[in-house]
Image (cartoon, rainbow, N blue to C red; front, side, top):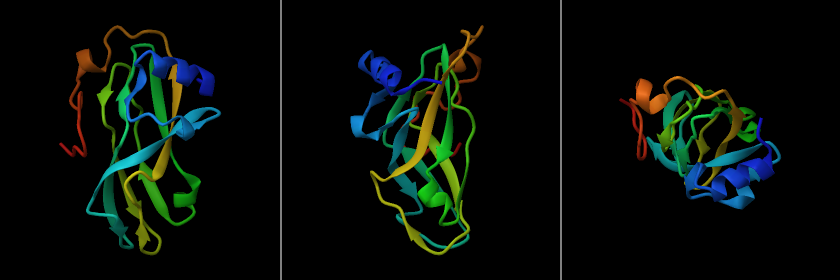
Length: 144
């Protein structure tokens, strides 16, 4: 798992987060991704499925993968998120799906919503771009 110093070093070299990086969003062992776009909007009714794209553009090298974890302030309010791994070699905005099981909540652009945690791996035979790359170079929310 990468720590804050290692993350910052990668970012300075154009890796991990290549656009909209904010040093104040670093955590000891990750980075708090912020809201870029949100569908259906900032006010989320109870029992509503919604989607958020990261403000940050992710730029994964071939030897690093990542996991996402919902910020506890939202989990404690009944927000549930379903996330997969961020594959080695991925580049673009991340689209994340959530459901609100709690009361109506407002989530605004630039709010930190999930923490991304980075892990080193042995370099794969084929990275994300060369294996499937379905969402490579995504911008904003992408559902298909």
